[in-house]
Image 1 (cartoon, helix red, strand yellow):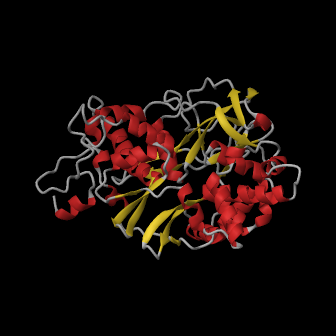
Image 2 (cartoon, rainbow, N blue to C red):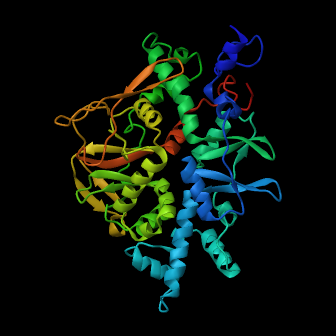
Length: 447
């Protein structure tokens, strides 16, 4: 095998003379961020300027660089902006309500669901500091809302996965203490796992089902391969405890729910609890382009986001991706990778009894009857017009077909769960081989 072949194949060890495959978690973080163009924002920029950067480059967060100290002081993401907007609106309303607190004023505007813990303490402090200075709030005032996680290029994916499993969405891979080589995200790690493990093991298992670990050359353990073929129900992801909003729900109320429950997305459901859309923290950035949307409904915000996607990215639709409870994790991964989505709603046909667990239908428990069909998320239900199927390719030119995306109103489905990238990272971390049980999987060692 040539040196070029070895360099192009991350499964192989870099040490001369060693051609044995290593477990995927022993891969170095630096290999997954090669040739990245890192976008950053000056720490003295305004919050609005930081949001403009997120929109322009279609990214979810951006590192903040302090030129005076020549160091990175934090990460700014859209949860920070949501907290800032809530805090600012609470302050403005509070100043106009002499008989109540700031939070009571905002609670009235959000249908009575606003709670004090919904607004980040740092957001309140940053807003107060900005007001006292008589100036706009700098993005650096929000920097510690989102810690700046950094790792060395030699850090293993296993070590990064442990951070992601606790809820972090990305880490900076440092070239040195003053320069970033690249940003490693949950999306990149999940795609890497799928391309080098899920697709290959699926193909190889057909040839030698007695030894699934050989299917991907030892790059995945038998336990991980078996986990991929478990259904979402078996993995405990059909919880039926979903944070939802209606199309007519005020945007301010939706923001308070995102912050209160620390979730990245809300299912938009109609009066019969059918999934009709998706509102994510990514939609918050569009409030920068049109401040009047703060007083609008969720439907209007999603529609505005769809228009701006067309302006900035050439997209003319806003897809809502979903899978059935009977779908396997392998299938769900193929859909996450092919669509680039951060989450998939788990849906089932029909609408059953809905038990309200919180005020205004914030969190709902749905006890719909699961379909008797053994549909694993592939073919659409009878009577639904079929669409062209998509596929995702691995580095070995193998393909896995996936079902077309579900669009609002296309299916009579109710939401019964969600699978996010964080859920996937937690499953991968929990099912990874333990180094103490098998020295072959020593994640602390370098390739």
